[in-house]
Image (tube, rainbow, N blue to C red; front, side, top):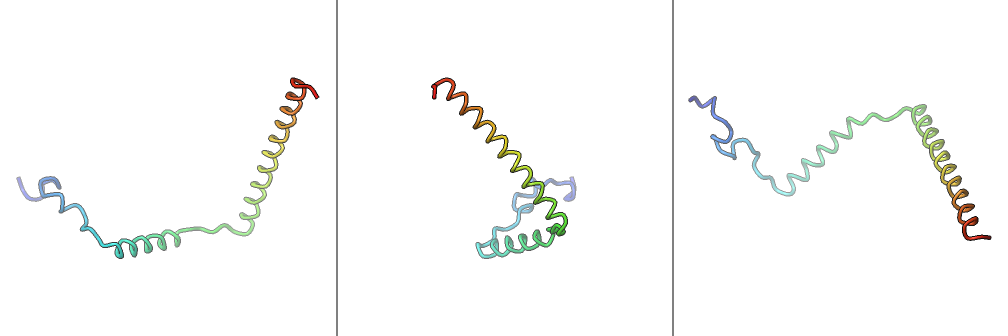
Length: 84
């Protein structure tokens, strides 16, 4: 068996794992990764933002109407069962 064919388990666990880092180094790495991810963010255009806002407002109005309708039905049902 050659060295190239040995597995990570045969070489030892420390060969495949990075060394433990200090708290400050891990914090700096985290901040770098956050900045890298924020650079990937695609901001919506003004028109897209207006469209998304309109969709959300319409959806909220529909849900509010549904809840008001259920409230009216339950109010009348309770009023019928318990009397005025």
